[in-house]
Each structure stands twice: as C-alpha cells, then as structure tokens.
Image 1: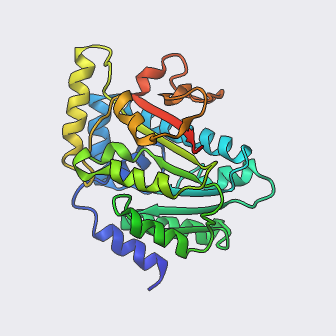
Image 2: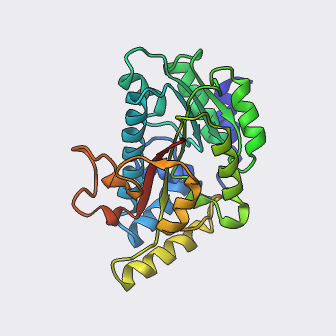
Length: 280
C-alpha cells in the first residue's frame, strides 16, 4: 500500500475524537490537524489562552536541547512520541548543528496518523540511510527498543539522546511510565542524554488558574490521550540517577533560552517543566 493510502486510512480511523498530537500540531501552527482538533483546541484556548504558547514553548525547548546535545558530541537520537512532523524536527536541528551530517534519528509514535506523516516527511526531505520513523509504544519498552535496534541506524554501544518531549503528561501513573523510564535509562550507554518536558499544575498564579487547569485536564479526558499533571518532584523521578545539565530542572523557557523563547519574562506561565540529564 502506498504511503499516501496509509495516511488516508489512519485519518479515517481517528476522527471520532480529538487527537492530542493533532491538537498540539494546531497550537504550534502545523497543517496536520482536522476540524474536530481545531474545535477542541479553540475550546482549550478560550479557557486557558496561554496553552497554545505553552505548546510552542515545548517545541522551542526541544530545538534548544537537541542543539545542545548535538554540539556536545551526540549524533544519535531516539524520539519517542515524536508526534506529527513540523518545522524544527530533530533531524533538521541536529543536521544544522552538526555540519558533518552524521546524525542518525529514529522517530517513534503509536498514533498511525503521526507515523504515516513522519514516514512521508522522511521520504521527501530526509536521508533514509540515517533517519527512520517506526511504530512503537513508550509503555512497551522492550518491544520498542528492539524495533529501534532493528532499524540498524542506532549503535546502542555509543551515547544516544533519548527524547520524550511533551509526552509524559499524556500518561497516567497507573500506566506505569516509571517502569518504562527505568528500562530506557538502563539501556542507554554512559554519556547519553535524556531530554524531557512535562505539563505541571504546580503553584498556579491564583484560584482562577487552578480551576482552568482542572478544566483542561477534564477536557483531555474526552480525547484519545487523557493524562495527568506532575509536580517538579514527581517529574524529577523520571530522570533516576542521571546528572542534570545546568540549569537543572526548570520551566522550559529558562532552559538555555535564546532570543526567540516565549515566556522569557515569566517562565512559570508556560506551565512546562523541562530538563536535560546525562548518564554518568
């Protein structure tokens, strides 16, 4: 079956509810979203006007973190929950940061529509000898890691940057994400990086924001991706004994900000916690 046909089938099978990946794509200005996603996104925007900018802040953090890892000598990336492709994909940022163009990337998602679009993007714009897109579920770590190995583009004996960006807030503790992260950290070679961010409801500005964040959580219960907020302490547990890169666990706009960083004057308004850590 042609890749275009796979995309069409994936779309047809996923339009009964909003998709978090497609809503995120809508918020950051992408083109891979549909009326049901835009209607949901507009509902969220009306209740929490800053949430679309928070999605952009996630994407900006990803770009800065990938650039940092690349310039630190990392040339292998595994992006779990990569979502729908848009500007500033990992392989694009890494290739820009490493003019040697020796970076290998494996994108992984469990949503058929995201996977199909990623495969189309890579077929058109990437080096298929170095960049792959595969199906996999973060919560099935053994199977996922085997599939990454089968691509042949990642050498597990060498450091890898594992990216789990804007994903964990769509996974509840009862789904055992901590066990999955324990597995992934154990598989990484010394010197590897772990790049993650997470939506938090910690320390709301006032009672109105508290109620709005509660409403946001309730809204997402009606999508294909309900989840949960986490506090700074709860999120930090996902890093295990890895060593946090300066400035540590912070709000995403505070992590190595550049002139484009949103929320630069009030990082906590982003509601996004972020960190990069290195395996000793």
